[in-house]
Image (cartoon, rainbow, N blue to C red):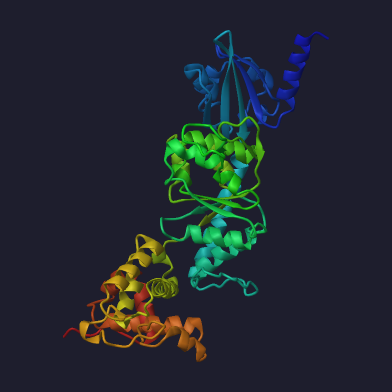
Length: 472
């Protein structure tokens, strides 16, 4: 059999046996030359009907919306789009130009049906929302699960469920996408996931994608060989991807990753190999990938700032961390932990005055945990005496090792005397509400101060036997 016939038969076998839906298009007139058999179910037309028309007609009829092959014909460059087909399916399609003697002659496109995956992801997100709503209404996590959270401060039920989810997926190598506002603790949870994983004895490599200049990104991520560029280290350097070998790679602010690096990262994820700058051989890398962002990646895809195929590679296990204002039960533990850090760092033993707690518990904390920690550090440094937030005449009070709650009692000491965490938090809440009850004029004002609904304030006041002081 002539070599040309062998090549033709090889091409047909590739087109007709692949799992992706392949189109071969004539670049001159957009005529469909061949398609893979599976395309019929996705695009709603038989293989014969597809091959009897052009991509221009298919786009006009809404079969291809839009046509990725037409984009390549227009630009002469590879293209990638999210298509909605005439059958209502959602597919990710990419196409590549084929040149002969400098002329564009063919366009090869392939698409993957993402509809079922999207439905599964939507179902997962719905189940997670419903469970969180159940917890907020007073449900509780499974009683048999014990969490060793080490440095994490998790007290509210919603965050406890998030931690349980992370613990369940930690032993696997599934990619985890951490979502949430800046400062909610995504890095802390990523580190905890690493501690629970089977890779805990190896490196946890933390990379802030927004902090590395784009001109240095490739050399920092992929490493380089000696002499790869002016100023390169004499011995070369292993990149961050290599440093994460056998461990966990955490890419924070993944939405800031440059497009060129997105393509290279995707190839590493798919192949498991990378090539240093200035090198000719590939190196095997094996890491667990965890990424985080405060951006809407789906919108970034729509705006052309993030690759769609990379998005689907990353969005395997999405974990959303709620803002601090929606989990105020965590504030006392976070405040105590930060205070202990500050006392150790600066070599003094300062405590919080009871008058500080209403501000801590009622703050908006738009910057979340990070803002809370910064506020406490400023307050620590600004306090002239040993009591943070105390009136000047009280600053000669001898501080104790543990700061006081609004009730004036040490939470740890109270726990040691047999009081549970729930009872301690209830006592702190009662003190805060009691102090506010004599300062505000209505339950609406109290609700605004605490950042909760007015009916919630009414229920809490009734539960604690409190009421707003009369102004008459």
